[in-house]
Image (cartoon, rainbow, N blue to C red; front, side, top):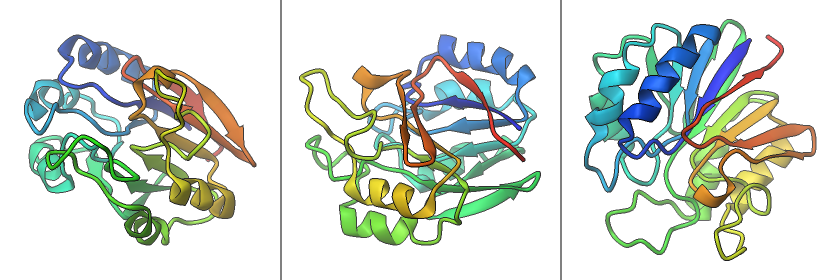
Length: 201
């Protein structure tokens, strides 16, 4: 299975248009959150992305809520919004958890969850699934521009216990495009450019 992974479009229509072209070579498209900016402009990219006819798995970022993302994708027939739940596509299990984890310093507008809430949202992730999260596991692809690590302990714990075959995240812009291996799992901070990865189905 070829998966096109991206995150953090932040209303960038040009990036969305390029992803539509890249999706021609993918079996599944995965978007790891932050389609909008502070809950504004959600349709800017989704109106373009909804022309993709491949199955798509999306999670909210901290810039839009799960309900906002579900409402904005009602006309994207092949898209599924996950947040504390999962789906199966061609025999491959996916599990999604969105939002900023841990709680960000950005204030009330940010769609955030603390580590205890995240642990609950992650609990049902099947062993060996593709895990789609907006926030990275701590001390992986989560180094901000000053070098501080900004990821989530609960997500890291879930990766270590559930051994997902792939973890797709975003959120920390300075580590876009970076990938590491955590145990048996490849962790990718996708960013808006788009990366085609292959997983066994």
